[in-house]
Image (cartoon, rainbow, N blue to C red; front, side, top):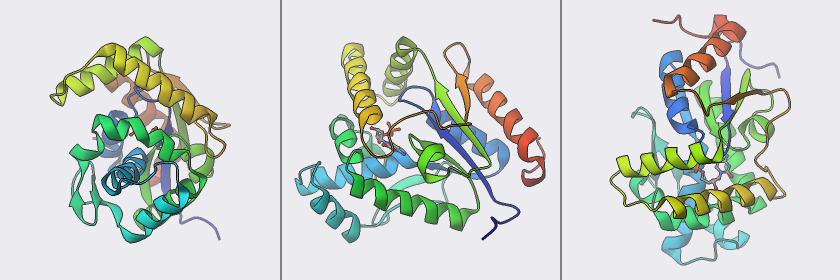
Amino acid sequence: MAPHPKRLIVTIDGPAGTGKSAVSGLLADRLGVQCLDTGAMYRSVALLAIRAEADPGDAESLLRLIDRHDIGFDWTQRPPVATIDGSPVEASIRDAEVGRVVSIVAAVPAVRAALVEAQRCIAAERLQLVSEGRDQGSVVFPDAEVRFFLTADPGVRVGRRVMQLQQAGREVDPQAVRAEIDTRDAIDSSRSVGPLMCPEGAIEIDTSALTLDEVVDRLEQEVRSTVADRVRPSC
Ligand code: DC
């Protein structure tokens, strides 16, 4: 079936600390569409596993949790707030403990299959979406209208993540942040299903020397020049 003439899926993939979340939210605002933080969905499954004291690598237990709970978003908020069974979980899914196990959860093929399907359903309902993660342009929406892959030097990425955590009022040890990012990158890039990679044909942008606004400007220009007829005019 041909896609809806107004459909607009913009994918933004890349490793931790490249600014994907902030960029996605701002780009979605400028385009007048919603944004989808797919990492929040993997984090929600990790949180459920921790709460249930389940093995984060055990497919059966995780699928049972996904079946029994509603992993979603409050779409009335901008950006949408992650929810489990309708209750907001944004603060809990950013906990260090969730950060430690989420890559294990995200490497389980059955979990990925369930969340990929959920992400496609969300896109079908929303029609226009900026979707960010690790596999959005490669696996979930390979036919997206515009696909981006963001990169940045490792030192820059650690610095950004440290600042993000400090702004959220967390105590931060930069060395621990670096170790966590390195470990997560290694697991995310080497898993058998949906590994972190630059999707073929995606626009790759090194954000190391760019401000947040400069990155968003660049992405907005690319989207507008590719699908001007599907986007509301710029202010
Ligand atoms: O972007 P983030 O740090 O919130 O992502 C949390 C984890 O989920 C990270 O280990 C990568 C994984 N993830 C994934 O495997 N696929 C996605 N589409 C999004 C996130």
